Image 1 (cartoon, rainbow, N blue to C red):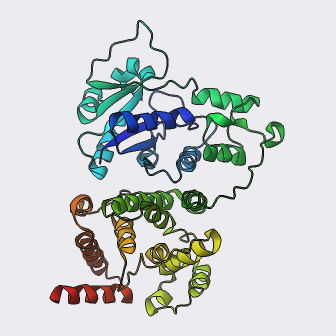
Image 2 (image 1 turned 90 degrees about the vertical axis):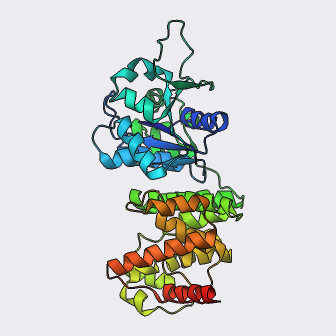
Image 3 (image 1 turned 180 degrees about the vertical axis):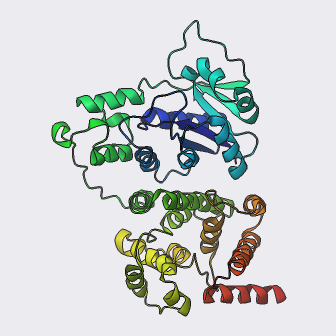
Length: 400
C-alpha cells in the first residue's frame, strides 16, 4: 500500500487539511494518508487553546468512517519535541509501504526545511511533496532536494485564524469539519463561549444508511475508549476494510465490525456480564474466570441494541473475535486477523503483516491463529474452548 504522511499541529484541523489529503490521494496515487499530530513542533511555539489529546480527538472525529485517512499517534506517544525524521523511520518500519512514503509539506515550510533535523536523510527516506499554501511569489526560494509539487487548490485559511475567530466570536464553524466543531463547542476550546456564540443544535438525521451508522458507532467508540484503545479499534477497522476488499467481501461491514469490536472495553466486569447474558448463551468457565473476555459478546449486544445492527455476520465477527468459534465465516476471520496484527500493535511478526498483503484468507487466518496460540502458551495463559474447537476443526479438515 502507498502511504503519504501529513503532519502538523492540527490546532484545530480544518477543511484545508482534509482537502490537501484528498488531493494527494487523487492526484498522486496514494492509497491512504496518515495524519500525524505533533506533540510539540521544534519550529513553533507551544500549541494554544487545546491539549495534544483534544487535537487528536478533533482529528479522529473529523475522519470517522473514511478508510482513506488514518491517524498515527506516534509523536504524541513519544512526547517532547516532534522530529519528522523520527516519524518517517517509525512509520516506514511499522507500515511497510510500497516504495518510499510521501511526505506532504506546505510551501511555507520550504525556506526553513534546511533547519529541520537531518533534512538530507528525510529527502532520502521519503518522497517530498510540496503543496501550495499561498499564491506563489515571484521570488520564492528554491528547494534543493528531490521533490514533487502538488498542484492543489489553495484554501486561504489557517488554524491560527480559526482560533482567533473563535475567541472573538466571529464566524468560524464551517472552516472545520463537523466532528471537530462539536468538540470545540462541547469543551469550550480556543475561548469558545456557548452562551455568547449561540451554537445551534444539530437537527436529527433520519437517514438509515450503513455509512451513517458507522460514523455514529465510531463517534461513540471514540467518546468511550481511551486514545490507545480507540486507535487500536480504528486500525482494526482499516485493516478489516483492506482485507475485505482483497477477499471480495463487503468492506463497509468489515469496517463496522472492526470499529465496534472493542466498544465495551471500558465497562466493568459486572456490566460486561449483564450484557453478555443478553445474547442467551451461558458463560464458559474461562469467561467466568476472566470476565474481561466478555467485552466481545457485550459489544455485539450493545451494537444491536443501541445502533440497530442486526446483520448476523457483523455481530458474529464481533462476538467471537477473542475466543473464535468452530464455523467462523469469512468476515469473522477477517476481523480476528485485523484485531491481532493491526499497525498499532507492537512486536508483531513482520511476516504476518506481509502475508496480509498476498496470502489467501484461510492461510492467513491459520497463521495468525497459530501465532496467537503460541503467544498464549508462552505466557501460560488459558486458551478458550472456542479456540480449541476451532483448532480441532482445522486439523480435521487438513486430514481429510
